[in-house]
Length: 61
Image 1 (spheres, rainbow, N blue to C red):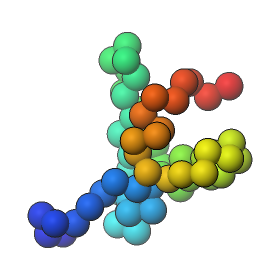
Image 2: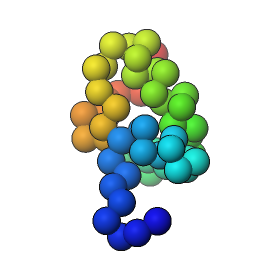
Image 3: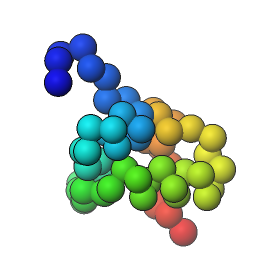
Image 4: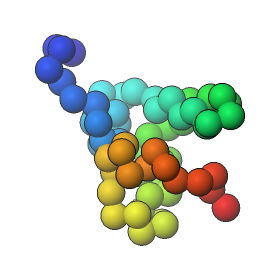
């Protein structure tokens, strides 16, 4: 992967076979499958797969 490749969407992580590291404000960190995250976004009708809008989301219900 070159230095110009962007990994700013879940689709980009999926295409490259990467996991997504998710960290809470409390410091808890977990590795998640971006395919699962993408499905959750679709279920919740978030309408986006980029990271910026997901960053401020609360814990899933």
